[in-house]
Image 1 (cartoon, rainbow, N blue to C red):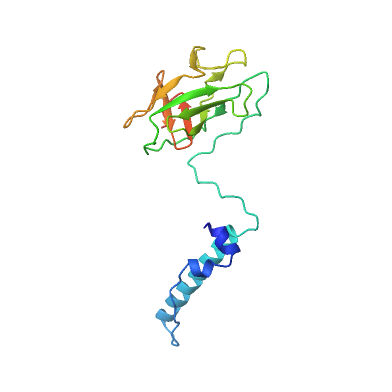
Image 2 (image 1 turned 90 degrees about the vertical axis):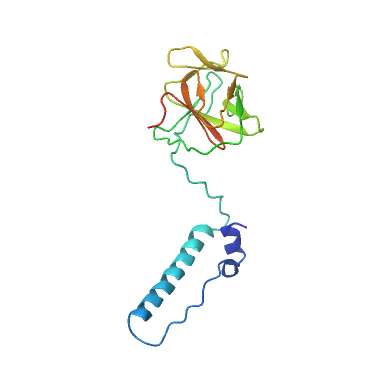
Length: 185
């Protein structure tokens, strides 16, 4: 169960087992320390409820190192690429897939994406130097204008190395693929 479900069901007290704190009836530093621990624990529980127990809450997004910029809504006269964030940090966590197939469909809501050999659909993010073709020419072009990716192209994901797409750095993640003009610094 999520924290929100526990709060909504009134089961938070059963989910979080707090130690019994007995505050001694004496003065001195021990009483102050015990009182402060009790207040800190109570504040933590209240903070958890306040942030996780809103009615009709949306799922909380996972924390990410960088946030990609917003892209315009795809139009019928062009293909839109998602722009990779400038401050991207690429994790050294191994992904489960070993290859991806790029898909480009000008009529789709997500026009450029990749499908992993595990069946997962991955969003693609591109450095601003890369450009998309038109609906009549559904490709992604390298900065010099050469075709970098066409629909159906396959990229191998090595086990213990960063993949490259025609010499450009690729950062694979669990649900996205970042194609970068330069490796992250």
